[in-house]
Length: 264
Length: 317
Image (tube, rainbow over all chains, first blue to last red; front, side, top):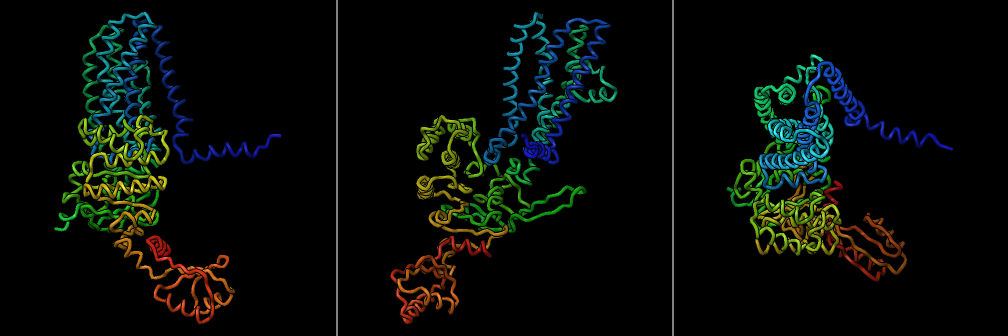
């Protein structure tokens, strides 16, 4: 005989956390919405493209996925680097040492760059093993478009960290959410033209959208990507500097309540 | 002038926390540290005592710069901490029973990272790590991830971190909380030896009153964010006038109890032993009165007041 009470107790035990934990609500609504947007827009583009036809689709798709790693994974690396100190209860230890926040930031960016070099090499090897694409052009294109996307990884990473230093551990998942929010509007997997008007307006503010547009125009239409790259670089540098400065401001501000409270 | 004579000088330090997010919730504030001032002299060991929530850890966090004060000033070595934080922290060690080192790094890797942040050059860094780990008895665990260590071993690794850069001041927040008595004794001996050999100054918070009495030259008692006493452990203990007298009675207990009720002395009874709380200067008169009443006892012992008695009296009040 199954008793309903203990089963319902387990349901309530988790459902009651919803009222206090934004992360659970985000998991329920945000991630499905993100998948719907990304794969829906990708489907629309493929359907439209089949009508007009285009070349290098395989390479464009692979580069879109690989280059987004520099943004998405980059953001994750920066987030995890800080969160690791929270999860291991080391945050007060670390910042009670003679360590400037400037030195921590530079150290994390260097670690990010090192990790991305490994990701690049690994990505190239995997693509060479599994796909028949002109590797010379693939590597060349990748190297041109990687640096401005690294800048994007940095500014999104430090923007997400602002949330963590303001909210503490509770803000960790929210921080990861913000990073992925930009994916549908960056034009990594499809041109931003397939987005609705408001989505296109948003994408014009994102440096990544110019970089991916440049990559697509170069590979698909043999156009010079320089104007797009310049926009991507300029916006990326401005955003990265702004995000880092704002992170430093938030970090110093969180000291008013104490760094120790971030682990609570 | 005084700030140049002491190695650490805290003046009128206040920390107020505000909560609430206007206009959604009403803003409220509470004062965790309320206008405290104290000095730490070279070679001095200063105890920081107080009930939970008294403001001990909040003060230490401000002394480390991981929490900003609402007002007041902190001077180390005559320098303003707010303006020279990094230079000052190079001479300050810190360990807390509440913190951990990154769990997936080994003890040696962790201390190597810390040593690099302190800019200790090789080979001194490795030598210092070896020396401290051997002293704290965890040299054989040096290649173990800190997440796999017992609480006592992890605390010893944190203490090694605190002393790694040959600091002039060490701030210890509950340093021996999770240590076995024998290891805690070794740590206390190490602290006293460091003070003797190198003249380092220490600020220690602890709930272990015996430890504070043994270690500290001076004790600050915090309550509700304010310093309510500042003296040696012995003087603080002596300020408690009540002592406990234990009597083992081998005649009938009833006459004793009747007498105790008559003179209204607080007492407890366990088998044939009575423990009486009495003012120290009344003991002689009390014992004489027992003799007059032909009350025979086989054993008498007197517990002098300790720092713990003092602590309990302020906690009660």
